[in-house]
Image (cartoon, rainbow, N blue to C red; front, side, top):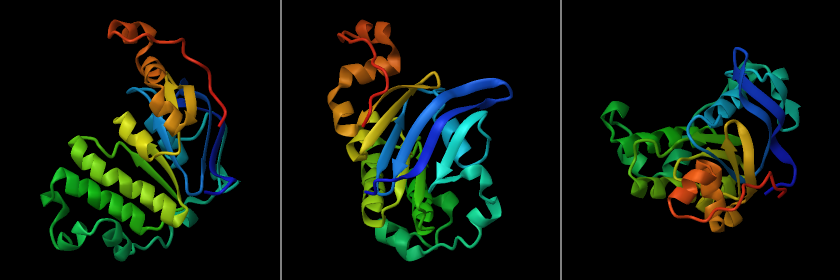
Length: 227
């Protein structure tokens, strides 16, 4: 893992028209690091990925990739010449080799997600962003796919920003995690610490009242914590 940030968001506010969805977000991903971005539906996780991909522009703040403001990077240069290396996809997902001649529409849900992730890895990205890999899949299939994301970061030094609804599966392969609630970071820290602090994670997701209703004694949510 490298010390300098590959991706950094500095006080970034995002939204559509005049309504902020994400407010004053600070987030970093280093090379070789897997960072989990967690939170309930509507928290602003996918909006954040859209901004990093330049599908929407920040209302304020700066998003940097490898030290450069992404707003100054020509989109044609960013996406030009990205050829697929099938051997990389087959290395991480050997079953794809047998499926190579089958139409994608005829693949199972798990096979389609494997294909999509394999195609992403085959581009040899410096930063891999994964948005809800588990959507519509059984947890057992997700458990087979997520370790490949960890392995890719370890072997290539690429940074990974991971959005995943299966919180503990995500934290099991991540180095660090951020929890977004209503567009603001309410919790951040090392993944192993977040895994141990289940009560705090529940409070961050559901609110103190709902968590207590489920029979958990929940401490008051803390602010962002340095890592």
